[in-house]
Length: 287
View 1 (cartoon, rainbow, N blue to C red):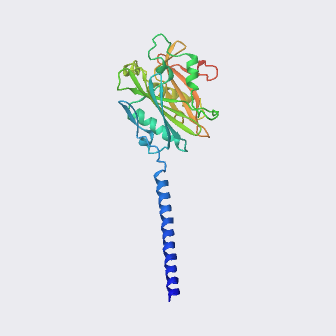
View 2: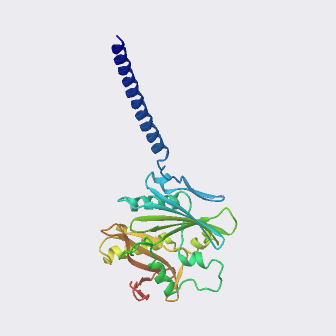
View 3: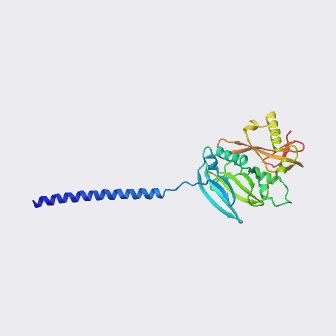
């Protein structure tokens, strides 16, 4: 009888040991799962681009597209800049175009060029020079850690008057091979007034239609004017001693990059059309 009791007791101990081990394994798996879920990296989100009182909805908020990879705050010369880094996708160009349209049509941003932002406080600097035009025309961005693409994209610059007096709230969009960047900052300066834009009877819209008619009627390009993205300079340029509107035409290439196919100047006074030579920096009358 005593031997039988010992055998039953041993079986009970084995069962308890098995249950204990099973519970221990369960607890370990539970804790590991909890730890991994807790430490899982949350996706970066930026609902808006904000510097002090200036704010605008972000590209992901407006388009519901785009993957935010990083947010890099930078302080340079006392000015705050925030860089938002997005992964390039197949539809990134369409996403950027949609956001640019939102900035211009709904928020009142206007396109800027380098001389508008760099010489706001300089009254002696000429409005435009051949060197400056060449720099602006060939302006582009590529990821700093990668080789520059053979067909570079222009930096898109848009601004609106800041809530802070005598400052511009600016958004730049730079495109690289693997990422595109939205740089948000504030600079000293004033945007061109509506009176300056509307002065005279030959407006930018008139210049666009005039150039469109010329290109389509003369077949100056391989496609019609509307097949290209047209971006007008902010302000006016002096070409051949004539005050002109400047406009660049871009086309999307096979790799998805926008590349420039032509830059033109249209005289406000004579309606002469000048084509800018991207290699030499010269402007030649073509009509």
